[in-house]
Image 1 (tube, helix red, strand yellow):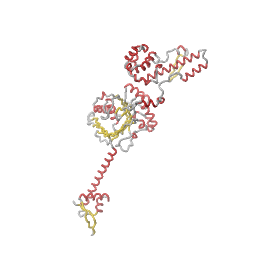
Image 2 (cartoon, helix red, strand yellow):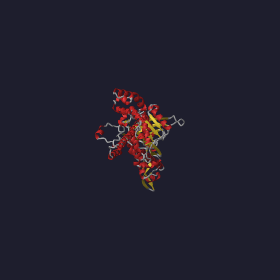
Image 3 (tube, rainbow, N blue to C red):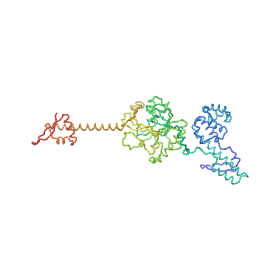
Image 4 (cartoon, rainbow, N blue to C red):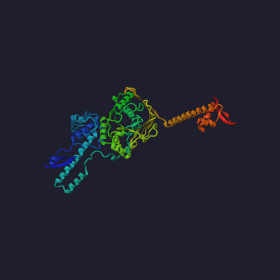
Length: 531
């Protein structure tokens, strides 16, 4: 028997070259992938549209699978509630046996998978083998034509050209997203209004950045958000949140700190942490790496995750060799695009926790997107929550913050958020700590801050002028018969302006009065103490 060899990755594979052993073999097919694809559809028939550009009825090799796929497409909604209902409907339509019968449907197909998370993977596998079979069929036809006397060389050349051009051979997978154009009428007909997961704070399906200066409770507020979503209780006790499934990856604070904060937040919400729909991880993925994003996508689909939180971004986006690109907006855009595509593909809402630049002039003013460190992050995010201290921390367990929310969907707000965490008692780490929050509109914070500054300035000026008066009064007491303004000014160390203010006030208060001062037989205007 003649054999041919093919080499891949340094390994040589030999396969038969004879017609009997090569062309008469079972065509390329993966029966398990076909069953698992159908089993995934039985668990989630609403996902049928996701694979419409990847597989069709003729993508299946097994006739039972081909018939079952076609009938799933046409079955009424009530028949797709469960495999038994579908089996009854197929039998009533007289096509049950063509689909393999009730036992095959319920025990072989429906039980082939536990969830629908691998739907697209199985669809791509089925499509791959369908392409191989189509190529094999065309190749067989070409070989037969070459042996047939009635076919000329020109006929065979034409068929070979058609085969090389891929004529009548299905494409592998869906076309790229940019090739899927829609007309204006379709766009106008779509009802795609944004949906809040947290009223005024977080919109579903859009990438979000939670930014803040160092030690502004970014992780704590992210945990508050996760527990609010995981339990359906208000974020910070003030913003209505929808109950959904959350996954949080944290690689900076440590398990003990995360658990402690989560327990305190859950207690503040009046819920048990163990009952919150949150999954936790303490090893960070690399969000710019396709293999890691694929695994996150699998987790999202398998666990039906709605919101994913990554803390912090600077650790889980770039590796050490890429750090120099952090200031390049084009480079950073290429690293962040995968997270956007993950949101588009799964409908998940990704949130990254991120630091601010260290070159901020006033650390006690609300922040803006421009304060986010690293190029491209502000441009990439579609919604944001930015934190800054409203007052310096006094190490009393009370954090007074500004919180700015906003998004490209058109919402936004500026709030004063106070978080009372308490302090440990110095002996027992589990006592003395809490999580109490209060939220209020920040209002005209700049005007209020200016008023406060002006008041402090006036108070300092008043204190200084009081000191000047005391110095002047002390000098006056040293001259019981009075003294001229020049001497009083020099001895009190006051300049002309400060002396004028001080003596005017003292005269008004009745603690001094004008007098004549006689020196060397001449009279001068002066002042004398009345005490």
